[in-house]
Image 1: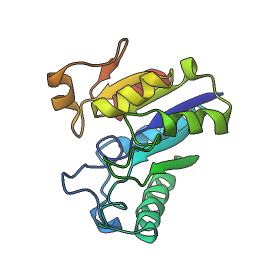
Image 2: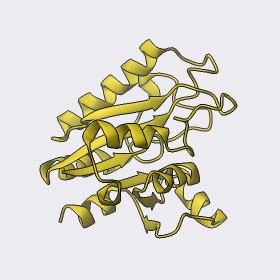
Image 3: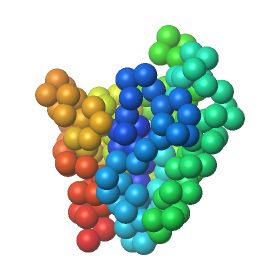
Amino acid sequence: MKLIILDRDGVINRDSDACIRNADEWRPLPGSLEAIARLSRAGYRVVVATNQSGIARGLFDLATLASIHAKMLQTVAAAGGRIDAIFFCPHGPDDGCACRKPRPGLFLEVLGRFRATPAEVHAIGDQLRDLQAAHAAGCRPILVLTGKGQATLANGGLPPDTVVRVDLAAVAAELAP
């Protein structure tokens, strides 16, 4: 099975330092919806794995997160793509959970649910924690330079064998030519 794991904010949609708090604030990055459609047409199972500490911080609730994700799923579908599952961590940075990136818990859950071989799974993120979680789970990390990606690249310390691409569209063009 071909499986790809995407971070949400900064990879699929624009990021915000204040976090995306409602569906109106969720806006896709140029080319991201088409990239997901391209991956879907090529037979990839597309999964989103995202930290959502805004829940723990009381900035929004689960119903609001569901409405954000419903908008994302609808816009991806309208572009001809499909997101097969969304995994999220609702905990804050100080909660010590195993699912919050940079820990690999979300990735391990995705791999188990889809019965995927980690070394065959590409994981795309724009922050170091995305790449660290992917690497710790045995996946193939790809840094995109959208969102916080340029700052992440400039700060260095990327996991070994991290591939760098300009955006999700470039990743899709390479994986699904």
